Length: 544
Image 1 (tube, rainbow, N blue to C red):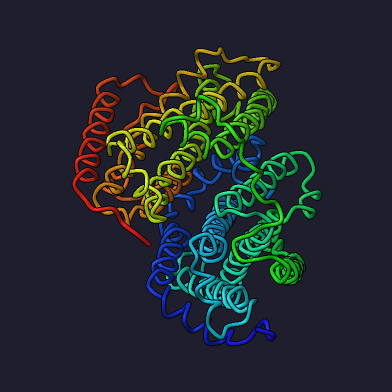
Image 2 (tube, one colour; image 1 turned 135 degrees about the horizontal axis):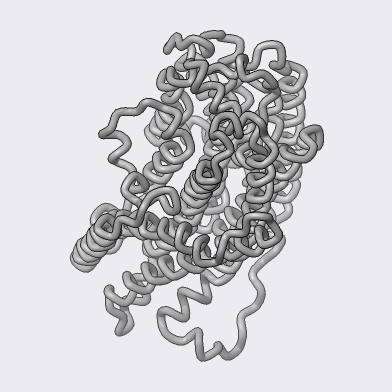
């Protein structure tokens, strides 16, 4: 087609018609994640509770690195609104960004890999119509989500969160970030030749900006203006007298200017490349394979080695960053007068503060590691949809070997990733006054792998029974993150807390080891894995 945008409107309507149910579930899920906590933070309105939270979340640099900063400098002003703004903005931005990246890659580069884009272009559709329609769909989605998010928080009529202006400020800054990171994914989709590489590079950039903001928020907050990820919470929503509308204007202006700049670059790159190709194609294969590549396990490892190595390195670096927070924690405990007044300078209480920080840190870290395992294990159904496993099953290859290979690869990879992250934490905190032993860190951190294995067991069951619904595991991971991140602040029903597997993991070193819980979870995981294999062995292979 000589007109690259020909029939963009038709394709846009087609995308909406095809994806409307998924988009509705996405919107409802995001609303449940971002707005559900608004009406559950009444406990924060208690002056004594707010004072304690102020000490822990505002004055403690380690927690600022995790949750983000706030300009509040008086405990009396740290009410429900500022608490919600500080704790929810960054986590909402990350959630919106991750979902946008996955959606854009699946609707652009992945569809090229699967041959769907080539099929579209066999009709009277311009070469850039699909990309433009996708951008229009993503922009419309985030605008609708922002409006609904603001109205849903307003409708709850919670004191401190009932200003419509502040609610729109929170909703649009977070949604703009989702749109922006979707554009980054679109750009990388033009450069790299595979969907997995595109996702990896985009998530890597997101992780890099996250790590940088952890450091700048504690040392020099003004540097955060050079970080895309920091723009959202620098608006300081729900903080009266500090809501930075200039920051919001600059956020939208720079975000959309950058988004359209990325879009323009994507247009240029897409016009000059073939369907399914990239500007960094895969290197040529060897004439003779290594001995380790023979056999199905060697094939899987060879295909996934780049992603595995990337995640392992990222886990170690993240561990180093998190380890630096322990020094800040010790300095905070020893120098803060409020902490001494609250805990009467008791060393046991100081250890409890460090212990609770370790529980929060290790649990969040394990959820990130679980996401790594989920990505690895879902490769099995991804290869199945592309009809690659069907060709392999023509050889003397059993389903047990396929199932166990992908599962063991995921489990062993998350164990190694968790170990490297904890090892990074151990190395970085060696120079602190109160050094934690290697055994103490490993014992407190590796116990969370029990929950990670349980998550992978649920996924293996889904892959065996209903592989088309395997992506629901991401909903459960988001739920776990929400409960871990804000569970202590919200007065949630007990039955809801019990749905989180993390509720049953021993919170070392704060709590004592509960071996019966651990064994029960592991036995249940083995049972789910066995049921998953039984279903996988009997069902037909899926295609498309």
